[in-house]
Image (cartoon, rainbow, N blue to C red; front, side, top):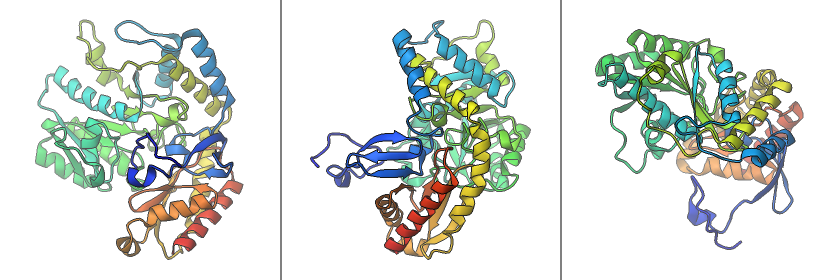
Amino acid sequence: MTDTAFWHPFAAMGAVRDAEFVITRGEDVWLWDDAGRRYLDATASLWNVNVGHGRAEITEAVTRQMRELATYQTFGDVTNRPARELTRRLAELAPVPGAKIFLVNGGGDAIDTAAKIAREYWARSGAPERTVLISREHAYHGTYGFGTSLAGMPPNRLAGPFVPDVVQVAYDDPTALEVELERLGPERVAAFFVEPVIGAGGVLPPPPGYIERVREICAQHGVLFVADSVICGFGRLGDWFGVDRFGIEPDLITFAKGVTSGYLPLGGVVAHERVAAPFWEAGAPPFRHGATYSGHPTACAAALANLDVMEHEGLLKRAGELEGSMYAALRTLGDHPLVSEVRGGTGVLGALEIDPERRAADAALPAKVAAAARERGVLIRPMISALAVSPPLTLTDEHLDLLTDAVRGALDAVA
């Protein structure tokens, strides 16, 4: 293969430049490469192709919309029918009262938007000193300005200096949040960012009661609770916004990925009516933030069709069934000498942690196992210390058998 001009994200280009893996087609849980080989997509691309590949319903909805109105901006008073319909529908599904929806292009945009809303909310509420943003160790909040600063994954914190007034706390201990609030003074803190299940940082489900307790702590101190549901929403945790199962009411929710199942780029922020109020009241100045493609009509049409598929095929219910069976399947790999821990059981995502002693001797072990699994016809995602699995919600038990057989074979080959 000749040298590529495509600079891949998160890639060591010296190795990739003449060795690209070219995917040409997708159907349901399957992908094909340019040599005609078929693979089980056990990653749903990047946690997001929740309804599976090749859905004609979404393609047709996008085609119809592009023939009518492919694109137009939504600044000021301008809107379009798909954007109005999608935001109405999302507001009805959201677990917060009087929800308002700010649409953006993807998850990184959503995080930066939520951070700016949080700080501006306090400025408009007479507390401009509330600027500090708190996130958790191992957290992934995208790679934009605020997201890089909020990152709890040290390798991702590059190209500093970072956005000021951003700190991290332990990912699994509510007391750590209380201690940090006491140290900072809660009157300085704008928001706490929480992934319901930490995704790219290792697939770390929350300890029992953790989400509920940190929500209470935020409420006690007037700190905005931001649920980063970019990975966890739209069925990945068996509900619409990734926090419904915990019975909490966030102040802000970021979403992307599964809202279109990745068929077109789209993301957004759900704002509680209380948070939206100072922006929506008569005479309020504009919130000077947004993107050319906010409320993009074709992307919104894709999202609407995707929501239809999820509802008509009962994929939220299917996700609830799949989370247990997939976790059980992954646990059968826990006895392998390369595996030190199996994580999962909260949503349709899981991880195999690679033994730390073995990884200390060879940091590339996760990538090597993923490559060996690919050779066996299954795509899994290598992370810093683990292997992640997050298939489309259309996965079957038969597919689970193929997945575990291929991964065990890959572990054996590398070991």
